[in-house]
Image (cartoon, rainbow, N blue to C red; front, side, top):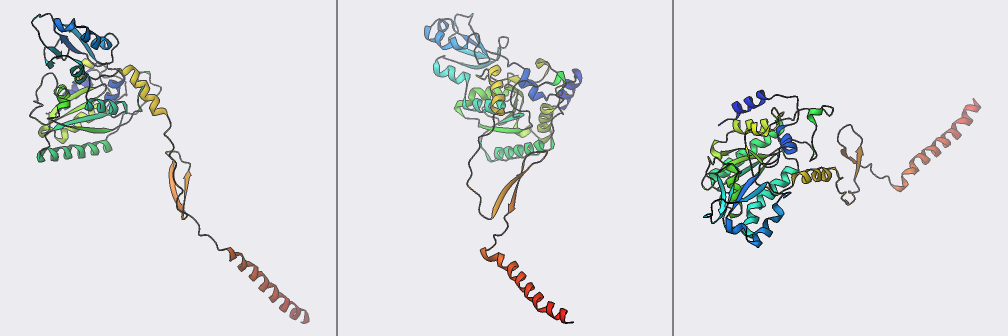
Length: 340
C-alpha cells in the first residue's frame, strides 16, 4: 500500500514556508505521546511500588503516566497506548523487572542512539530468519542505500525564522536499519508498539518493517512481502522532504515508549557533535611516502606524494669535475688563440 495519496494530502493541506525536513521537525518539536499505565488498586498502595514509580512522576524521563484502576477487580497492571485508548500493549504483575522491561529494552537503547546521532529514518526490520526473509531484508537494505545516494535534503536558509533547527545533532541524510527477530523475548513489547494500536500486523507470525523517526515516532508498519521499492521510496522521501504540516496529529503515525528526557538529551547531542574528534597518533609513514594536506574550499584533501629519491653522498662531484675539465680546455685553447 503506497503512501503517496496520503502524503500529497498532508503536504497540500498545510503548506508553509518551513524548509526543515519532516524527520528533523519531529525531532525538534514533536513531544512524544504518553503511554498510560493502569495499576490495580491494591498494588498502587504498596510502598515498594510507590517507591518504584516515584522517579516516573512529574518530570519523569519516559513518555509514560499512570493512574489507579477504577475497577476494584483488576488484578494486573495494564499498559495502554494512551489515556483515551483501550488497546493494551502489555499486562502483568508489576515489579522491578517488569517495569524495567516496560520502560526500556536493548533495541530501544540502540534506536535512541541512532536518533540522537541524527539518522533520518531507522527502518526496524523484524523477521523470522527464514531464507525468504533474508532475501527480502537484503533487497530493502540495497534499496535504502540507493535512495540515500539519490535523495537530497531541502536547502536550509539560516536567516529564515520559520526554518530554525532546534538543539540536536547535525542535519544529515541517512537511512539505517535495525534488525530484530520476531521471537526475541526482550523485544516483544517493542514489536507490539512498532505495529501500532490498530495492530493490522501480527508481530508473532508476520515479518515486517517499521519506519522510526523523530522522538520515536513510527510512520507506519508494512509486512516485508508488501514493502516494495515504491513504498520504501514514498516513506523515505516524505520524511526527508519539507515539513508541510507542523501539527503532529495531522501527520500519520504513532509513538513508542522510550525512557529518555529529550529536552536534555538533544542539547547534549549537539554538544557532543561539536566536540573535535580525538586525534589518533599514527605511526610514521614509510620512507618512500610523504603525506601533505593541501588547503581547499571543501573538506581537507589528503594527498600521498612520492618522496624524491635520495641523492648519494658523492653526487656533488659531477659538477666539480665538469668545471675542472672546462678550465683545462680553456687553458689549452687560449694560448693557441693568442698565437694567431
